[in-house]
Image (cartoon, rainbow, N blue to C red; front, side, top):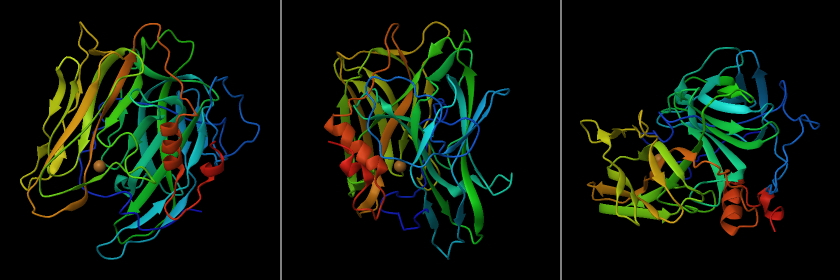
Length: 382
Ligand SMILES: [Cu+2]
């Protein structure tokens, strides 16, 4: 059962330029052989040295079209009541585990909302969809890897499949979460959120480069707890928020985008060790000053792959806001950047340390649901 609650505080809704993973790629995911959630004798799990202990989660359905090299991860159907005037009906889905049924490299993804039949519903119903890998860490933080995030603003994303792909292995697990929101006077029944991934099977000579998503947020490491919201209040006037860290392994940033809310003035990524500004952008706004988009940059060119970064340097993300309203805007600000990263030759992606306290707190927040005082993780961690 899904919980229907007012989640505005936890997931503030506003017009935003959600480009985090937009033109950047694709990332990852999911599984079980043919369909049906929860096959207890699923495919063999890939050996992994340090797996986090997760509570038993319901399994998302994963369909494989091995002829088209497409994986479809689907969450169970939920009903969405019609919205009352000026309000929104929200349905927060349970957290699901997804197990990858095959091995390969993801090069494209899209998230769809469909009805009980094959009809594709308005994308506006998707508040967000998130996919995490609890066993691989984030580049800049020892938490589980944010594989992908999508909301109604997020277009389908892809990279050239001969060049780039996010590797995954059969038996690898992911954590999927989604929230639906209905602002229309129409009720929908049997609504399913679906993630469609296109992949290159393992054993092909391509893609040339195995790449991973990376991200940084000015509210790292944990944001607001519990729940881990990365939104922050905007007082009148100027607000500057920063966070800095070093990557766990050396490699190359292939491109990046960012995410800010209305009244965002700029967002940047800087190598603090050298002082070099790697990326600095101002959001595009409409005539009323609302943020419409934030440009996405691809660093790779014919003669180079991108911006090389190393664990010996520190990198800082900074978001600047100018709130002209004279009032505090609760949860009005956010500042995040992200993109794709190519590890240096010979580097393997770092696993998580399940004993790390930041890892444990972030996992707790990932599994936490509003209204639950006692999430299952409480007795799963040490
Ligand atoms: Cu936001």
